[in-house]
Amino acid sequence: MILPIVPYGHPVLRQKGGKVSEVTPEIRQLAADMIETMHEANGVGLAAQQVGRALQLTVLDVRTTDRASQLFMGVREVNIESAMPMILLNPVVLSPEKPEMGEEGCLSFPGVTGDVERAHSIRVSATNLEGEPLQFTATGLLGRAIQHEVDHLNGVLFIDRMTPEERTPLEPKIRVIEKETLEVLKKKRKARGR
Ligand code: ZN
Image (tube, rainbow, N blue to C red; front, top):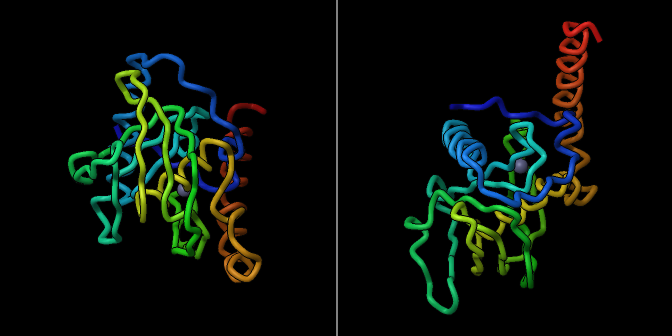
């Protein structure tokens, strides 16, 4: 099922996700719905907060882009295609290395893109949908996308990571999205009788 994507201005995007301690049928369904939603929106990643759930759960798929990525399990390089889509529970970014600038967008900020500094290479520790621990190294776009999503799971957004020079020209677009979101939330509150 395709879920509505929460736009900037909604308070859930600032909430830190709760740990997923058990892979219930509900979590499996949520992960499947998030993958469907991400694919439909042509995104490379989606965090649970972006579908209104403050949980440590994110999905990724970098196959839709031609920006280079590498994935290593131990010392062995793994074919990226075979690892996509990726579902990460409780992911943590470890040993970030080689900071670099790169362009990012976000499904919660339609039409907004800007350069953000991220590590080129990261180690990731997470749990998979079988509830098993998972450790790998990701570089390039996959590494960048994971850093962006892990930020979401902690209530941090890509605009927070931009330099003032990068963010200032985007500010009018960001304000429009925020204002629309707040108006929709206000209408919903009214419809519920406050
Ligand atoms: Zn995002």
